[in-house]
Length: 117
Picture 1 (tube, helix red, strand yellow):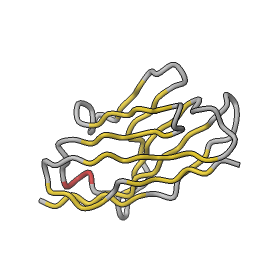
Picture 2: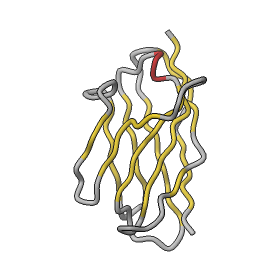
Picture 3: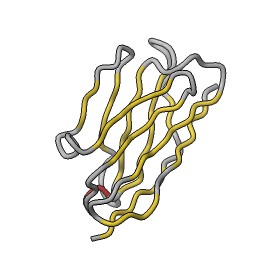
Picture 4: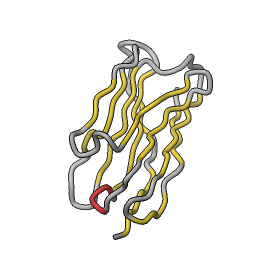
């Protein structure tokens, strides 16, 4: 069993920054692949950023150049650095990861990010 616990969300003004963290607990040795997703009120959950086991990254067009996904496999923690935040980034952000190739994907509980104009 793997648990993902997010932190770092909050209220920030437009143009500000936040760093989300997602700490994994359980019998794991780092992440195999991972991603961040978000869901705004009344909208479907959408992909924000992903990272493969070899470190290749992919970003939604709406966040390219502003958000950065990273991980620390020693701490079993993944991050999402969000800069130049805009009101349209307001959403609940979820981390998603698997710890072994072909294994199940796990979800965090979500953390609220609110960007005021």
